[in-house]
Image (cartoon, rainbow, N blue to C red):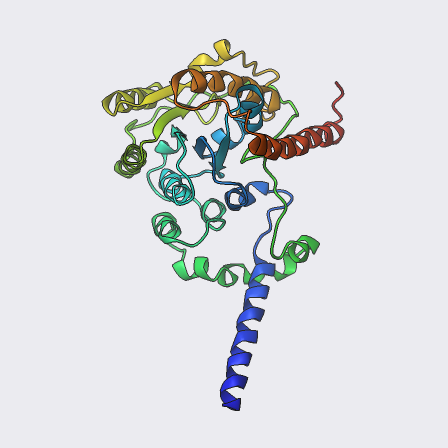
Length: 344
């Protein structure tokens, strides 16, 4: 019996030690590539959102849930990640529905251009923050590149063991919990870099989206309809990557066939009031805060006028939670003003 206890205790200590080492070696995404923390942040938020955005940087950099709340009382969250592929969006939506059932899901259609897995680093930023479930398992299997291995997602230490030379104080400070880098999934930038010499898209040999992309778009559509959720397809007003007319027509046709709303915000930039001289921080790829406010104001009005979403600012407990987010949001604005030497 004593030997059994010794073995058991030794195994538990070994497992705890392995877990601790693995947590140290996992990337913390606290400085240069903060987008890697966005997926995990969702689980710290109360699952009571009326609108959930899914997609890539064209949602998490272009829409501000704080603005949607302050102006319209829309309680929303963005489950976005860098180069989020459409099957990753599907499994993230599937994961989201384990915790809540929003009234509206908004999906940005740029990822239709990718029919196959693209990049391990982006895969991990979209997947590693997910809690373990069959949704995560299926997401891994759908996303892995040829040289990736499932076991390295189960035991990330196998993938990150060589990081020992790159460890910083953050890797030890944030072993179990990393600071939130987004505001309900929104990544804020307030600096400006005007769009100039934006390239036209090169001619393609085939403009048709792939079978795999349509397969997962069908799954997103069905999942929403089965759960009585209104699905809105959008194309964010980013000038680049280039959005072809042929791609747009496919989305118009798909929305019509499946009785969905599709909004191409690129065609509405003048109506929205977006000025790419001032409303972007990287030459037209993404909007800065002023652009995100304009787009959120416009889309928020559409949501209130055309969906079952209602103004919830009268709910005391929810408003108190938002007040904390807004205070941090405003503080980040002040921090960035100092960082980028911006004066009012």
